[in-house]
Image (cartoon, rainbow over all chains, first blue to last red; front, top):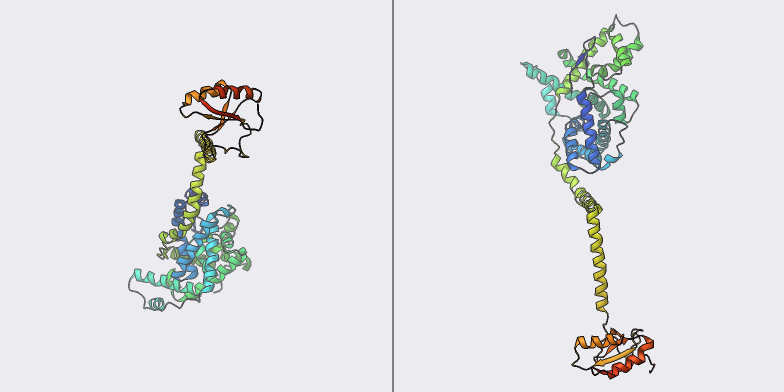
Length: 205
Length: 210
């Protein structure tokens, strides 16, 4: 995700809109045009581009592997069946993620919340690991556990921001809500993550 | 924890709210300037920015391996591909082929042939003769003749030609033929026909007698 980082005055990594990203968007646009005329090869290519990103997004959002498959397939079926309705007023990725977001929340409403991952908690509560790799694993597990304590809407905002590198305006489009709602969700999510990670936060820095 | 450097709550709240997107480079220039200005004087936000950057790194490292499988999704496309896409593609292909001038000409010629052949079949399927006294006898038939059995085809054609007659029906069940001759010359034609040794019988058939 991070390509050719620029450093600003306080050393923050800025992700520029690179030529590669633009040509990627062009390719996706061309693929979608072919999908509109039911070109299965183009659809497969589009699927392979989006499958990892959507799977990642949905794992965090729905938190059930069996639902991830179902929602991802349903999302791509909507893309296949309604590609001609995409008018290009937003980015293609925004449109596809918005479909996935709606499908995920709808699927979640049919399922009870997942039982807590006891095995995961057991790993997290282990004594500090003797080497760096296990130490990092502990942080990783702590973060995964902390994410389960957020609402689905908060997890979506957090993941779209930190992993998918989206701005709050784009996230507002995906979640179909005002930008201030996105900022508020992120603010509360960060506070809860901070609380959940309190024990390990010192190790982070 | 109190922050001795912070001087104004509102820019702090705004900047802190935007920090995640500052860390990922997703702010517009105005917002970025606001955050940077605030960061210069806010130790709390500088610490928080470090956490944000660490969060970005950690989220990048969280890579669940989920293969949802193209093959499974492809199967869901199959019915649509077979009945709709394929039919549409084949129809379009036929139309494209028919749209070519040479092919269109050939198709038109074939169509004309089919119409011709159908007409031919239709005409062949009709009775090839009319019974004597039949109401549906050709209106133009005004003479009935019967040739002697040994008359060759060339001979009776010569007889017809000599009398300006055309064959319009026959042979009937009695081996008679229906002829049409110009009305004005029919008496003379009947006379010649009766005189011809190939003709066994020649009669007017529309009730008029010469």
